[in-house]
Length: 264
Image (spheres, rainbow, N blue to C red):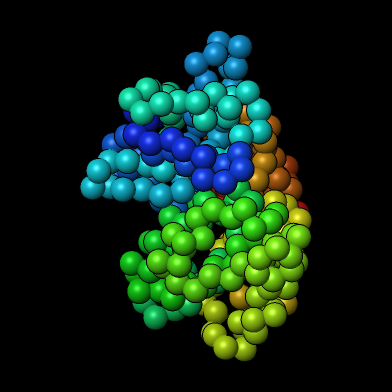
């Protein structure tokens, strides 16, 4: 796989330090699956390593891909300043996404998202709804400065929680789902989650406790993005054939894993 230069179509701030960028990228738009990511490259020679950014949405007809990202350093700050018509080097799609075969028409999927783990779930919700799956999404934010909530409502029910209690449920996404008695009202066919590790630990326990098959998209620092550098290792119960150790590469073997296949 070779990187290519995509063309920025739109790039704007949608919440504090959260940006949405649509990029003309025909190959990615044609082949991307929910849960995959790309590597975006800086034009600054001092920044040799790319930034892994999840795929938020795809418009296959217009051959565009949407990335929603948080500005946390000089690389992502550079991305936020890109104007329509400018190019950005892209490598992708990368990694393994969610296993959609776990869901069939008439099933109900429960999605958990927190922080910048929220954007990739939008593409997943869109595809699941298209398959005839009912989607319930629990979204966790720091405050009422939310993003993408209205987009998620197009694909199903949305439960919002905030750390400061300024909007929705005051607390985490798991307690918000319990507060809404979701499991008493719905037969959940599977859980998919993306967010910070503490949240994923809670979702894993929630899935095990309720005997629901659970898929987790892990957040790790990635260097190469293609499984060569072994910089994004996660511990596993079983020995990995690649390294002969009890670990897997998040970028190459994931970022999505079944909850029982990783140790958080």
